[in-house]
Image (cartoon, each protein chain N blue to C red):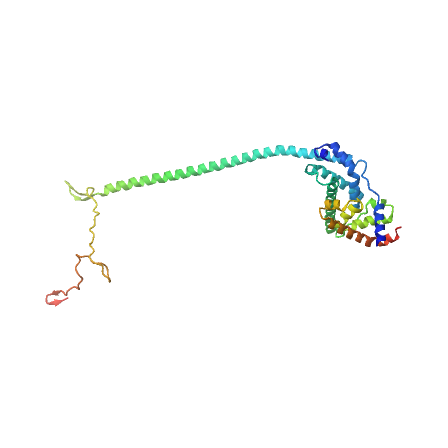
Length: 165
Length: 176
């Protein structure tokens, strides 16, 4: 195998060294120039595109905000108008009820040609006090009975004209 | 490289002049095509020019350049492979492999067969083998280019050589 290795090495060494063409560097520098030009143009475009995009973004955002605000203001105005209408309606209803209440305190009971018989309740005060029922004891089997209440008893048979009901 | 890094076109041209033959030769052996190699070398230097700003002068420049060249060739090979698959799908018959002028220009039959055999090697064996046998680089430098250990490089070169020998036995026996 050593012989084969030597032959292989010799074969490798016998391969001719390839050389670049004479205009290799010139062509390369042209391509480098083009690449640079493209890169510079791209950078210039970027310098223009970035501020333009930023301004456009600000404009779009502002416009969207303006439209949204206007719609919101319209909605609030409509809501305010609806509330105002409801308030006016309730106020009118309130006045109506108040008027009715004043009218209902005087009742016409009757009368003739010379006089009117009316009942004026406007001077009356509402009786709101209710007497408390005193508690005497608390039984096990039932509710507490008031002291003043009479003990329960079955009704006695009622005698009428010799008969009993 | 430092001057080229700051956009000095003259320095870049000098850099190209110094390394262009090496890159073209390396790419010719790697891809098996002289025309492709010249175009790929152009792409390599163009990539180098755009990457000069990110270049760090820690490793050797030759290794850095060959790494770019390897990646460029690999991208090209993948692109060709995709094209072949697509063409095969469209035409139902794989397109014939066109023999480049290199094969016609090579004087000896053995050299032509060797170039073909190298081209037939898998990429992982081909790159370290060409770097070692054609560019005569050290294992350390190859490991730097391929970003792997020296042991891996040695193993791959050995396996690549083994495959080459198996392919070339009929020709090597006749070569004196």
